[in-house]
Image (tube, rainbow, N blue to C red; front, side, top):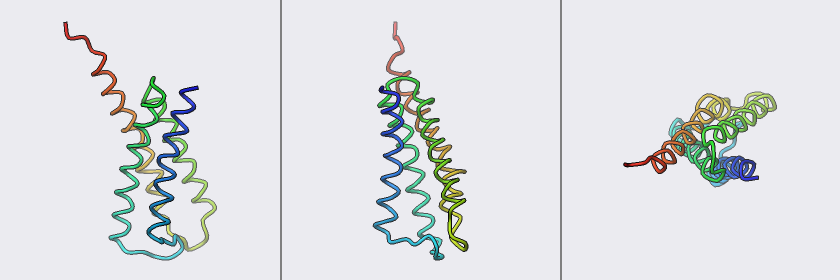
Amino acid sequence: MRSALGILVGSLVYAVAQAVFFTVSGYDPVRPTSAGFVTVAIAFGALMAVVAGFVAGWVAGISPFGHAFAVAFIIAIGAAISLIMRPSGGALWPQLSSVLLFAPLALLGGYLRGRITARGTRRTD
């Protein structure tokens, strides 16, 4: 049960953060945008992907990297579906950055959670 909850919460952390960011910014994916906005959006998405992977492993309580992998897979599949369904002429960078950058960074979050967990369970005899 905690495994499914970890994956769900991690995925929601990423999805809700991205939805709020794009809603608040008023970004329209069909229109071109400035390089500055793209840079900020990618930095924010990268941070949220790491947090999502970390949270998935933390909530699950076991196998943080495995749970982060599930979140990374969900991020990549969502982006691939979005890429396939995007309107012609729409920007590619949100989907490509999700597949090529954010999904792998979710794995980093799981790795970091695993390192913290391993550090806490080491014996110091």
